[in-house]
Length: 313
Length: 249
Image (tube, rainbow over all chains, first blue to last red; front, side, top):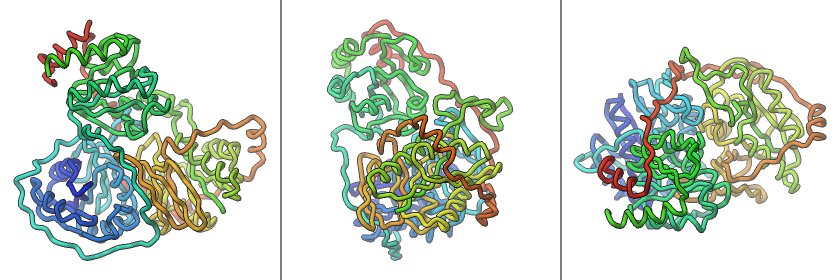
């Protein structure tokens, strides 16, 4: 038994999500190799080699993989993956884009967004926006899997000493090309990996009002998120959306401000360790999942929260 | 150009999901069903391409039991020209669905296939990508903008941390994300007209595909409920609890 883990990386750094995928691979057992594919990814491969539990890093440094185009990456992953019992990636945007093509190439089913490993072929995954949890068994000889990374504690980033081998095969399907990328610039931590997340909902009333949340976020070193209602209302961009159809987060502390707690939002943050809800509607469903609920007008409570936090952090 | 839109019948997104007491699945008896929301966005995008004069014909396709013709009629009422139902009562998993759609693509030869990025029942997010691979097509997944430019389509995709734009050779597969468009409602006259539009039924065997599920669902359970929390009276109390009880700040 052996697993090929597909590394996530951006701006020349190994993404933390990869360490969680390695953790999921460890739960399955067997040797773990990590594939780093991209352009100028030498440093990423070195970082992956240091991760705990990795036997070997395969480094595919080629223009064809430079923008992580699924049409090209999937050909590489399928070629290497046929020598493994498991091929795994995170359920991030690259994994979601690429892994089904890999599964189709290998003629196997894909198990999406696993949240636990029961055995080498049996996994738990959320269905119906997290309203039900399915235990599924794969009967294929190769298991193609994406991992809900918030469900697995990352392995140590340091301490390993895997070898790095370069992979020469360059697959360019020649049917798609990169045009441009527009990444949100932010000094705040990434939503998916932040220790603290503070999110605003429809109750914020406008995008301008998110400033009061941002002040609190800066005090706590938190990422700022939003409910789908706030996104649909045009207050904030979609990449801030926390929920089944947006980002899945599981920080130590999640503060929901002016969020009613629709099922689709709860599916995206329900695994947070401590949940705080501030809402003036005491019947809002968010209070059913909150560890600490405060029934209050957010426009009074949030500035007060900022003042109180200044005293203690 | 010809556009193929794949749609799926799923539980209505407003319905509260209940797990069956015997843990074999989700209770769908007497539950309101509807077109998957991401598929509605796919139909809308196709209709807009036709309104712009880019698409000349829209073919809607679904895979499922006889009743899923309701969702095809909805697609026809929204602006699709004709419909194909792959009729089966069997469980069709993503890979088999992609193989059936590939057979439909081979027959229809569309220039563009538009479908939802995922269905809100199984939440797999696989079929569009699998179809693209099987059909040898490029893909623009999680699309928030689609622009046909001659022999190519430019797709802006929602990715972690922002947006990424790709240019794809046609034919291509596009899967929709929430912000691509806001679907219209079908008007009553269009609903009436849709009843007369052509709807063809084929079987998986006609397409040369036999559904062979690779994944066995052993159990379906309710998620673990959270321990009930408390209400605090003031911001001071909240900060005190977070610092001294929960120890998260």
